[in-house]
Image (tube, rainbow, N blue to C red; front, side, top):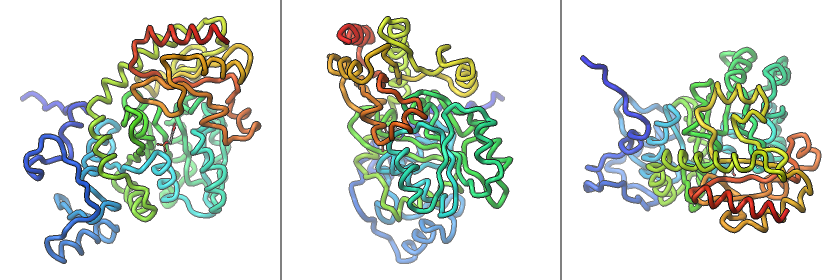
Length: 415
Ligand SMILES: Cc1ncc(COP(=O)(O)O)c(C=O)c1O
């Protein structure tokens, strides 16, 4: 008998987590715009709380009653069930934003006296959380340069029994440097213990879930700004965390207590976008490759930072081959001269591209990391993270790539 082939994620995302017969046969999940849910009996309510608050786990096949939208809601649960398909995760949690996901996950696993070791740079908001907020709660944070060798990463973890989390953003925003995730796993295992597992967390916003899957590479928890590719249309803000069911438990409790949950309308919108995620990411990547081709070798461009490009260096290319299955649609480039003034001239001259932060949407967005997304960092921190004033970040959308290339050429001519 022929072996049954497992459906691909692109098929599973249309099927998981939703039974039309429980919603009048509606082909598409309705929006469950309700704050609270009516229990059939008091015993059912009691059992739902036992499960939601981790007092007693759900039995196999048991489907607990819904309680309250800050705890759970059908739109969030349908989406959570579907997004696990791409990353191969057991469980997922939807949040009000990427920062909601990152902060809630960190607070679920870090306590005063613990240390978080992170790749530098990371998104500006995450950087602020790590450099200012977590230390104010007694959590020590230490950084290593994104793309550092396993030896350099290990030097920070070795001999420090307080290390609880190794956090990497790969590729890093905005320098596009990849971190070695299997090496992070090996370091975590060598220096952790069964009673004190060091967790590897990966922000997979830039290439995931299509072109980079950190869980099989050894990550414990994958994090996303779902505002970006998952939402994909610059019309919703959301975040995701994915991991094993056991690791997701404390994260979901923290979400309930902090109130960093998403709402039914946003969950529905992100769910609607899920069907075109693969199409969009592949098409946007195609456009980005054309733009990279036009930028590379342009007389006014000093460097193009893009995963897998030989200019990123042999080690980065090797990491990209080992860890990624695509290059994505985010491009960072540096101007040959003129620093911030030249970058601003270019940003003010583009016509098709939109001057805005954020990324991963269907419209091309262009921004200046040093004065915008990463402006919280001090000059010294930027220098250490290689974020320069001549740097521009581009998120390629779905416009005709030839129009984008023309746009960049005319804008570069004004620099
Ligand atoms: C890599 C990365 N992670 C996290 C975030 C934060 O996500 P959100 O804006 O949805 O809170 C961003 C936002 O730009 C990001 O680029």
